[in-house]
Length: 119
Image (cartoon, rainbow, N blue to C red):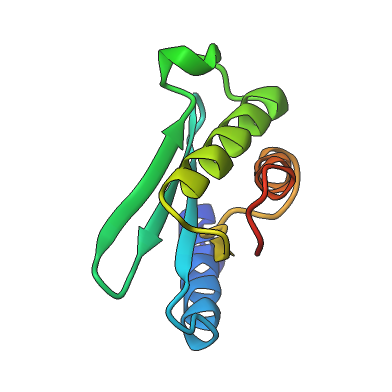
C-alpha cells in the first residue's frame, strides 16, 4: 500500500529529529517550518523547553509579508542569525523537520550561516 505524502513527511521528520537528538549535546535547535504562504524559524532550547529567538516572513519589518520564495527565506535566515547573537547563541543544530534541504530551506540555512550561526 502506498504511503500518502503526509505520511512520508511525518516519517522523514521523525527520522531527522531522532538523529539530531542523539548528537544534540545541549545545543539549541534551529527549527524550520515552511507553509505554502510563509516560512518561519525558531531557536529552541530543548533542555529548558524555551524558545530563545524566532523569525518569520509574517513580520512587517522584514518586508516580505505574504511571500514564500528564496529571497524571503534568505531574509528570515539573516534575521534569525542576528537575533540568535543577541540571545547569546553561536552554535546550534539545524532541524529541517520533514522538509527537503533545497530551495527555500537551503537559502534560509545559508543566510543564517553567513549571519554567524554555526551548525
